[in-house]
Image (cartoon, rainbow, N blue to C red; front, side, top):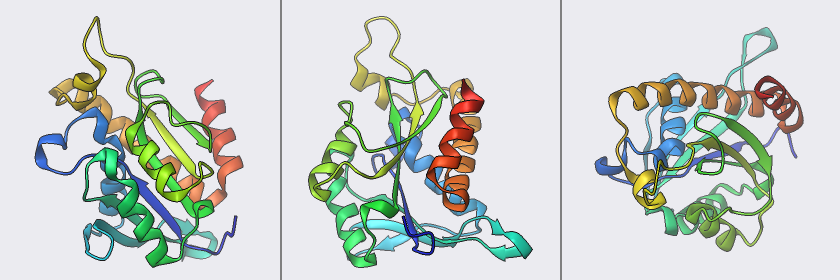
Length: 202
């Protein structure tokens, strides 16, 4: 991992207002929060069919602005998001070793965060599409737990249902924590950040 190379931080989700407050869009929410924290907004990157924002993330010793980061979300739906993201990576000349993908995870308890590199996609269509287009699973992921649907509710309906006021308020806290993890990852690296996160949650 090249500490001087810029990072690409991708939030998975679906485009459109109807999906904005759903569990499936927690990746989008985290990336948009990072842009807001930096005083920036996501703008259209037509060459790749994404929306991006170029920021400096965090602060280095001596008050120096932190590393260069490109934030991105795909303009396409979750199950076809790999194409736009892979095109953006080629445009930016960024490899999988500098890619961090933020996504929802049904297999984690709600609001739990986990950082990993590589591994399977766990049935997640966004990760499947990305892996297919990149030709590798060896990229970093920040998993945001959304828990399993209650009763016999269909998982697809659960992840795409709009959050009620209380659930959105709780998710906002989780999104803030996820954004902090992203900043730690960029500033301090994968191993240190993973150890800190998993120790705090254990």
